[in-house]
Image (cartoon, rainbow, N blue to C red; front, side, top):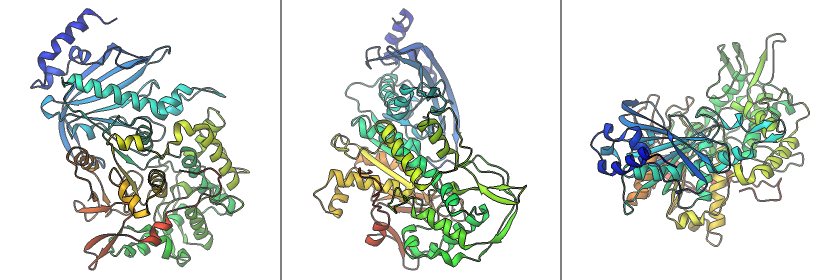
Length: 580
């Protein structure tokens, strides 16, 4: 039962509706008064005593890819809730703009890897657009605690409730509570429209789709970047490159693969009609570039220390050599994607011009040779999520074949189909509720294959509009769901190897305009954020149209190219069930 002081605070809060200053609303008593009622969400009890409030002034953000530079004030509110019948505690955090900046908007944010949130880094993306912005800890113990730290209670014993929270429930509760808290914090009436949005990439992209697929009217719109859905496929895909090197018994020096990538970029750059250091048509690269032409090319790389960003990598010595036929064969095998021992396609891989970050090898100074380096993302999925062993590494891949990878994928698909797989293709309820989705994926993503997003888009199109032609069904889907392949972009970010590539930094604003003003984006606004062309704008074409520059590289056209479209579509015939 709530205290008398809390009830008094609730009574007086209505007198400061849309108060003029941050000080009027950013207090513990005011935030407590704005909490959703005990009976608002069945099975959830909010703890008013857990409320922590802090006003923040002149916060600044710069050099971010998901929102522009800005300076702003906000109210930082954190509180906890529990689930009836469980001895748990879930933390949520909401940043709320000053009353004068609030524009009747709410934004949920997601995480990356095995984290259900991205820390405070995603929240400014809401404040900038006049939205309250929220994140959750999923009940994992703190905002810094990831799902993999709480998944196993002991070897062989899983914490299934944490899986449900990570899979979809945590973001759902964050959104439902956040919307109501925002309405009451700003004293909105029942007739006031609160527009609700989402923005996230990678795991955050998967989390976004988990809600669109399950909770039709929760959001008015969502930005989903490079989603890590089809979860077991995606995690085992990280091991595929390692198994390629082991199977072909050649462990290329890291510099050799870097040389192959850089030469591929140089060769395929002009195929899009403009030479600017950006491969905007990796499909044409796949169709027309012969990588055997790289054999004999010299390479040199300086020594480098071990690194944890953007992906874990071991230290390397200075390297000199020439590209070998074996190295090119490794690259080609990786790009064509995983096939089983009968030649059937199991999954797809990365596009030409994407870096081979999964194919890192490790230098042994004792033997002066290169050997296997096991990818940590894939290894942890096998140990912790398939074997249910509290370990995050595999000592080696002895005996692991392409068929082994297929079996691991299938096992994970069966076990996590209802939680982490997240590719339900029938989005009729969301579409009928009026929701909008902007889905984007970097064309040179080296962590999640770009073809993964195209496959899901095409699954939704074929399931929802089975009687329409390709063009008609694509147009019908584009009424509410649009996919944009970002030329040259890496995983959820810009690409240092292709610095002149555009990035859609203001995608959330584009979504807001679509939802609130009915302005559907024919193309996506991109900005070059680095390199010699920094600050320039460039449009990004909507799938299935592909970019091509005419008039000596001065005019961008979004063209229909059937051969290029077909190069993105795979028949995953290694499985009898459809892989959406």
